[in-house]
Amino acid sequence: MDFHHRKTLAVTLLHDLFTQKRKKRRSVWVHPILQKRQKHGEFHQLIQELRLDNGRFKAYFRLNKDQFDYILGKVGPSISKQSFCRETISPAQRLCICLRYLATGDSFRTIAFSYRVGHSTVAGIIKDVCEAIWDNLVEEYMPPPDRERWQEIAADFQQLWNFPNCVGAVDGKHIVIQAPASSGSLYFNYKGSFSIVLLAVVDARYRFQVVDVGAYGRSSDGGTLAASAFGRALCQGTLGIPEDKPLPGAEHLGPIPYVFVADEAFPLRRHMMRPHPGQKIGREQRLYNYRLSRARRMVDTGAMGDLHRMSSNNSSREAITIREKFTQYFSSTEGPVPWQENII
View (cartoon, rainbow, N blue to C red):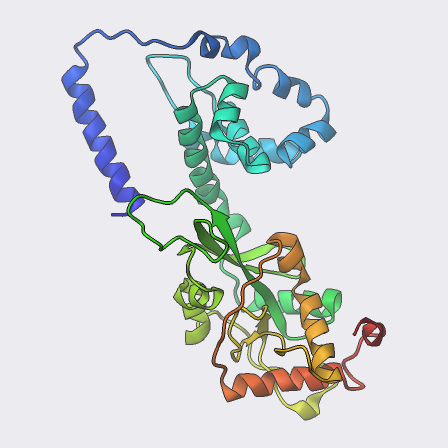
């Protein structure tokens, strides 16, 4: 049963419960600490002072005041709540609670004490606000890339990272979670913790272009890719990637596909390049590995952080040929960068 079904059932159940008991007078007890929210709570004190200092405001939330106000304008109507029993928590305070959690990873309990709200209230607020941020901003800031957008990304990779015909860097990241009830080993990963996997495609300027989250922690990166909507579209040729194009100055190599770059945990495919395996490889292979590693730096150490996972993959002969052409190109007179010989 998915989230929307559960939510609908919960709303129906609560409606019936409220209807049955609304004639009964109930006293609502609020802890004295929570009663002093407006006087001592972080939102009503510290946050108002931080708004006078944009630098400290950004250090607290990881975004500036204008960005905060912009997001609030977008999601405010979606996170407004009404309560007839107690003081309403404003949309601004709800956004503060969520952004503070996202900026720090503090526990719900820590944030609950800081803002003087209930622990379960914090959990509900973070869930609701995250959903509102996604629903209200995804079409504006993460629309599905089209052919023109892929070409823009490829131009950036060539200009900034000296890797032509590259339309994105792919990686996976384990998000640690508490083990769901009765889940067995589905979420148990190779690091010995429970997790779900975030699969992402990042452009040359550290911006997410595609995300897929929710795969079981025990899945390999290659398995996560194959099971994702992005992976299926990649295999089916429905991503809108431009037609093959010769590498700059290397028409003799023929048309080369636009590719994504990934680490050794991913399979070598026609549109997916990974490093040459092994330590005892030749000069040209080392140059290729360096250039590929440099091109995927923004996803490895920037947008996603390090992720190391090894797996074996069967690669098509065509994909191997494409990798060899990139390898040949980076060592030819047309494709080198001045400093690469000093790196390897």
